[in-house]
Image 1 (tube, rainbow, N blue to C red):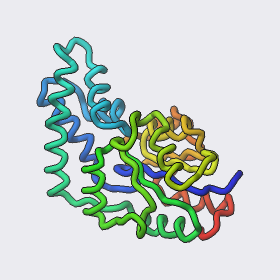
Image 2: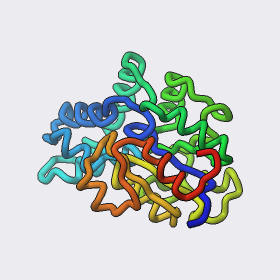
Image 3: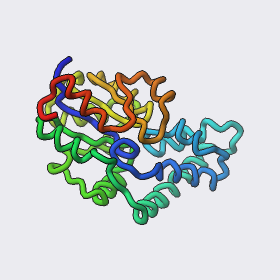
Length: 233
């Protein structure tokens, strides 16, 4: 097993504890638009994706809707407004041990990158609320706005690799709480993919994507990387 030079972490549900606000908001705006879906169906079809595509995929899963594209467009417009309002008024925090994990990785010479299906504006709002700064807590942030194709395509991971002149995806570990995170890592050719059970999806759905490892929480990665001899862990 080659050394890991970069770890790419998902945000909500993986590193950021926000109580699934994003998917609860997707659920609310879709129901308000007359799309009869449950929160579980939203989590199944939307988790990990760029949010307009996520909403479109949820709508597409419901048969017999009039003007599904119109529903998706209106729901997404309201989603952006509602989510920003939600994040202004709720507590957002990093999961226990995440900041320490970041620090250990960076001290060992491993780049720490956050990637997300959020827009750049929402992602930066989250970082501000968390007090996480590029160059201090993380090395880079890559959002769905930064690439032509979001998850499950590997473009965000390739963008992160290019930022640090990493040419071999086998040197990258991808971690996330959704099957789409795992698919993204596999499509990029990452050396390791890790699922975590702290967010949107459960063990069965993550297992279907066949990650290399599944942990109850992200800090399980510490023991994994220690086994592979990563400096600083």
